[in-house]
Structures are given as C-alpha cells and as structure tokens.
Image (cartoon, rainbow, N blue to C red; front, side, top):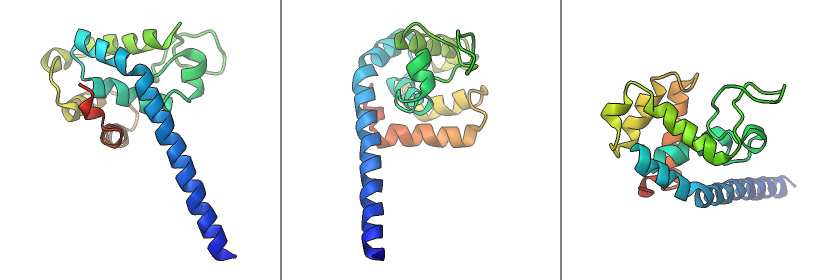
Length: 153
C-alpha cells in the first residue's frame, strides 16, 4: 500500500510540474514577441522582461494577471475592491508600464543595452521592487535558467 501511495505522489508531482512547465512555455510563446519588441525599444533584456512577468503573474495564471492584466505586480489604481494592484486595459499595457518604470530608475541609463541579466536582476532588486530581494533574485535567476530565457535576446 505504501509503495502505491509513493508512486501516486511521484506521478502527481510529475504531472503538476509538467502543467507548470507547459503553462510557462505557452506564456513565453504568447509574450516573447512583445518582450523582444520592448527590449529593442527600451534596451532591457528580453529575459528580464519575460522572467519577471512569469514570476510575478504565475505565467499569467494569477488572479491579478487575469482580472487586472497586471503581469508585474505593480501597485496602483484599479476598479476593484479586492486588490491594491494597478489595473491595465491589456497585458501589453502592463508590459510597457513595467519597461517605463525601469527606464525611470537611476540605474537605467548605465544599464540600457547591457545584456547581463544577472546584473539587471541585482539592480532591480536594489530598487525595492520586491519586499524579499534575495528570494526574488533567486526566483528570477532560476526562471531564466530553467526556461532558457537567456537565449531570448
């Protein structure tokens, strides 16, 4: 009986991780063109744009991403009572706003066009983007590596 339970747990874990991986791949496919276009316009690596969107929105599955089109966890005005996150008319508007926010940071002019995603992650985390910068940096790095987003330039 214990052997069957262990096998079932392994199968469920494998199934759940595959759904997540498939969902992430689908998300990357959907937003890769937009991220590349914004990367060219703003000089922010595509890997940074996509990985932060993946982590902050649960690859588009979070309630905030679905209902408010907010893929970056940006706080602001909305038309709902259940959230303090900013509402956008489209995911594209959310992606652009993220890039505009990065372009307004002090580090941006020195980083613009730099492909070193690890340095971008460090600089962004130092701006207070996350309340847990060390864990956030780790999640973003792992997301880039796991999904081979460093090849998305």
